[in-house]
Amino acid sequence: MSISTAREGHQYPPAHPYQVSREAIREFATAVKSQHPVHHDVDAARELGHRDLVAPPSFAVVVAQRAEAAVVQDPEVGIDFSRVVHADERFTHHSPILAGDTLTAATTLDRIRVMGAGAMVTTRTEIADQDGASRCTVLSSLLVRADEEDDETGGGRA
Amino acid sequence: MSIDISTLEKGTEIGSREVALSRADLIRYAAASGDHNPIHWNERFAREVGLDGVIAHGMLTMGLTVDLVSEWAGDPAAVVDYQARFTRPVPVPDAEDGAPDAPTVTLTVSGRVGAVDVEAGTVRADLTVTLGETKVLAKSQAVVRL
Image 1 (cartoon, rainbow over the protein chains, first blue to last red):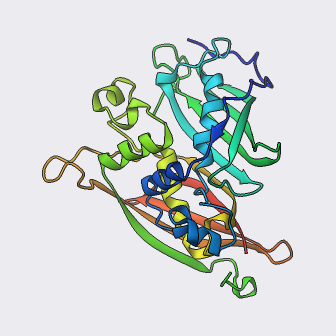
Image 2: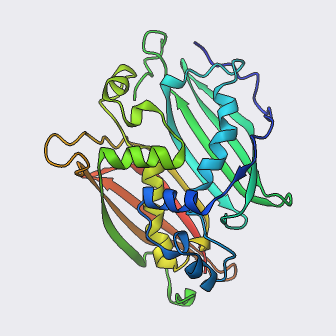
């Protein structure tokens, strides 16, 4: 399978809105071993001036990946998901994600850099709330590893 | 917030901690995050796609790491920017004996101030995450608004 760069710059339709629940925040915070009370205790969050529970800084990936899936599943891009490893991630928070938010994520395929028979695919996902305010920008790069048999440059590695 | 930005300078230590991981932690993260890629829980599949075995989600390592900064800042909402590159995999073997959720690897997380912008009221924390002697993240940086 080979990667096509024709879709560079393409913006995919937004994913179905994601409603941020207290339980999702607590479950995610527990999974990343974060005991900070603003992730778990509503009163503690309010004491620090927040409307409700605060999502951990990397929680936005949960919302973003639902939109990013459109890129991985796009046959015109041609990503073999079994050969994908995550290369980098960046969250720029315009305001913190809180329980009670309804968030919409839309992904743009920013860049495809072909490397031998593999490629680095970089996406930008804009997360906005129910009022249309921009809340978080998520940059993510996937390394699609070359299939050793196809790779004439010898670049296939984990 | 309790930190006085004027007391910070490049190199100021913000702390360190060890984080033990088990296969159960990977499954818990898969459930919480919705990332069910089988390379994070199935040994056979991981080997079939050319890995040496099951590896942790890069996003789990990233998520665990930033908590050091959240605690230091006093409020996780102060983290306005957070990035990392996943440079080395973190293999998490199944527990061979004892409890099924017994940790099989330990990551060491530490952080220092990388830059201070008094005018903007922001501090960049540079984080180091190692598995033994190997750094598993590169350019792991969190910007905190104090």
